[in-house]
Length: 301
Image 1 (tube, helix red, strand yellow):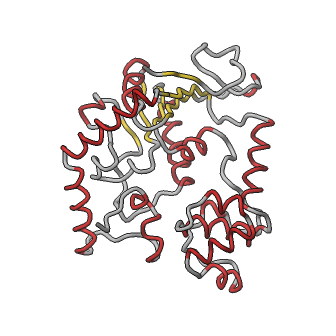
Image 2: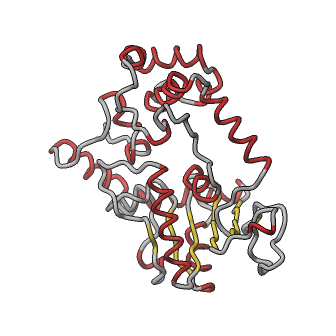
């Protein structure tokens, strides 16, 4: 069974009861949106299809791994049969070596939502990547940098720093970067894994380019969001939950099915493509398994 809840503090008086908006009724948005969120295995994809069939909707994928082509079993995509003819957007369009930043998702998803609304259909965002969902639903939810600095959220870790001094500080191995981050921003250091060089470097870049700790910027942002809702759309959010005693056996069954249908073969095929050079991995040598699809799949074995 699903437990469904929603984000919102008040219902817009001119809106049907099943749509919730921001607490200021004068700011009711024209474009409608349904978002389905929740942990792995609770049935988000299935609910997205069922709602689409009932409400003339189209699904917009918000899972950062399901944007990749062919890797259907690894990323546990909903099959064509299971989609039951419901259009699914932002799925199966990237090659394994490509990256897809949250800012790119935000732009693409907003464009698709507007198009679906314009055709008098209901856009339904389904996904398990929380920062994708957050960037889409709320305005100004991504970390912003001062005008004089680069937008760190949108800058790949391989980009050159703004000065040679920064370059000297950042062009080192992950353990050294991590120790430096623990000194200047222990909150963010505690948040990242010591081997995740890309995220550690980004937090250090934020500090070096803005003069403010990355954690302080995020805290200020959350405080601003708490003062006033900045929802982009007339939004209804389904937050699905399953009791772990019911969910865990379901996940075990899912993994068994993935193995039976060729999980290891899919991984081996990807490994073979890397060995042959037909698929290349993004990032520097010590960041290759921290970008794109490679964050979730270790093909070194």
